[in-house]
Length: 312
Image (cartoon, rainbow, N blue to C red):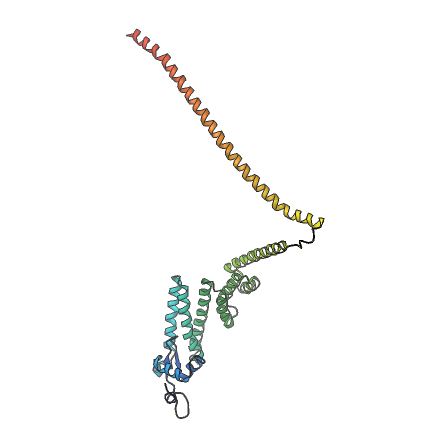
């Protein structure tokens, strides 16, 4: 687009016309001046005017001067984000909520409801819900810093918001920032002393902090233990004794473990031999009993035949 066409967008006094169009990038409505601010450093003046008149969709003044359309778009996207979240599509949910929040931010920035406190408060609550949703979605994606960022934006508007404090503390604890996470939980418990989720998270944070401290101590011990001594200097008797004492528990542990497995193998072999002997003895007894019964039968059977013949 030539410079003459750009100039045609303004009146004789150089003021840009009030025509407004929808930017396909985010679905929000902008004037040319607003796009100039949005895309500063991205497009030059000619490219921006061309983008405005060829890519952006036309809007009537009656539509752009009213926030109803922006609010409806925001509500639809907010519901879409909720549906995607319930399906487990957390990335899609965050995209929908982010776009919805842009619509809400547009309404707030333009001050459409500055003379209507009830509507203004409704928009404010929608903004808070979207920020909380974005924080929760970021937790699901384990994007801890984003979760903290969105929770902090809620706390800037309402410093006692318990859900924001809880989600911030979860992210901080997952990052290993136990002091800051515990501080956020303390602030929450001052507001809701009987909050069960906060109490459970506080106990988890304390356990995690203790475990992290133990691991750091072990790592430090291993680091210092692995430092090589100067091979040119022979160890003193005291150092040799200390090394022996330090290494003896490990050596004893290995020895005990070795004997434990040896005893296990020995016990297993003894049981197998005992079972084999028991089977052998049982087989011998069965054979002896069978022979005895057979001999008894052979002795008694003829006598029965003689007696039966006498009776006949």
